[in-house]
Length: 146
Image 1 (cartoon, rainbow, N blue to C red):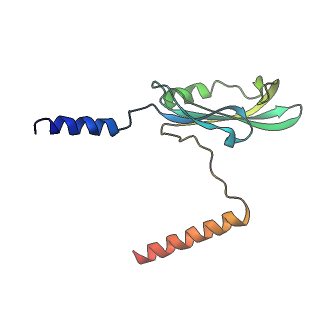
Image 2: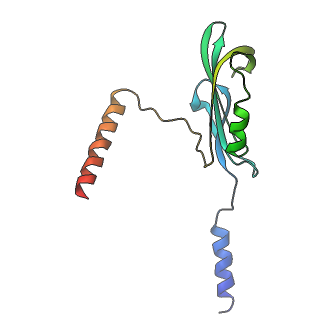
Image 3: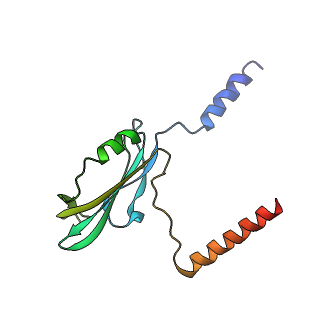
């Protein structure tokens, strides 16, 4: 019976998923946030930063999204202010072309939880309105029952 305790502990440890690093959504200079995919970050990563650079290319306005793994948010936000709007920066597009984008605005956000830099979900059209109405009704009903 003395073996049962250590054997149970060993079995329990085998069933536990090993500790891994942070997971973040990652993409570079994409137009659609749905093109960002989850990645396992290196162990030293402490945040999931996102940046949306809005600017013009040949007179047409674009917003390019970049997400990934990063250092802790305090450091990310300190360096985020170094980008100077009004300057032109080379952007490599999804199809591999190099173009210059005149930056109007860069919005940087940072969070420190697993997959926290996901794009907000949008429920389009009447289905979205119907689902939101149903959820609101159910929430009100549950609140009344309490």
